[in-house]
Length: 492
View (cartoon, rainbow, N blue to C red):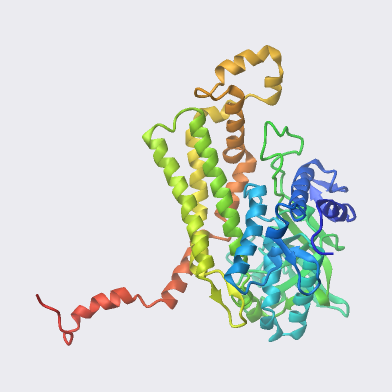
């Protein structure tokens, strides 16, 4: 089939009936549920971009194997040009959502591609695992599927490993083997956008210990698999808010969910890893699923930071405060943050690394630096918006107020911005800013960015330890040579 349209994506959603729970009630019609409907339409727009003459050549290509047009997110990069083509796909999708949706289809397309292109690692443990992930990659690629993933254990007793929890199946684990497949039980999170996706892929971060064998799992399933329950968090908006009053929250709410597996059957051909602690701990470094998708998340993070920065700049301009030195300093800081991330992305691409199989990966250090900086840069951008908007963020009238002729004269007089900015224009900007920095929707975006790749302190510690292990600090060693009495010091 190759690239599908938005209509085909919606048609597939309507054909399934996964067990989705929202606010204590079972959702029986995903598309008609107000909380999900607008995000579904936003996803459909992304699929339609693949058919748009303006973008089709930039974000898709003809697959050598099938002859069908497929997304550039499925490229196994072999050159800088491949990285560039893939980045263009990321940019187009991110800009269409202002970087506010972290789990658009391109993200996990890259994960599955990377896992499949490095499947020889899995072959060493079980040839069937490698065969399965290669087949699954083709299935996702050829049907242009939309995946969610669940890779984190519920936050129960975090001082103990999975096998030490009070209940053996608090964390997702294997119950037993059957001729048809593996029976699994327990929970995984944080399945972003799960209710409106096609399938889920499950795997885990490294950190398994002896005794955790049954929890060392990687597999994929359709979302409507019997026994799979999707428990949604509280919605950040009810799906009925005016687009005028909530221009972002009304469109880009990314539902997160806990997935509960009640003795779910995973067919053997969908199992990618099982009962092997060593393989599970090496899955990330050996398949590139930590680095390749970081390319997508870096591009998406750049667009999100750029959007927040532009909101801050326009907000300051609308009320004439960007003439003050302290405001200029804050806005300059945000702009430099954007340029720093942009530069790091380009360095990661230009200084790419080539694996033993000839696959090209963006450089680790700059991508990991982006991961370390965004959890502080984005919150700072939100803080600057809050400072600039101040009390004005709390006082915006509604669309209904502007529609009432009895109020219009007051609104036009008292909500006007600097000279040349009408009351309506100013209120539009303040509503956009409030969605981003004050609403529950915006606070979720903030928390999401802080912990997008895990605990930022732990990630930075890992980065330091990798740096120490792989670098010899030559400059210091050269400086210390002066203390070697056998060396002659040049004299004047």
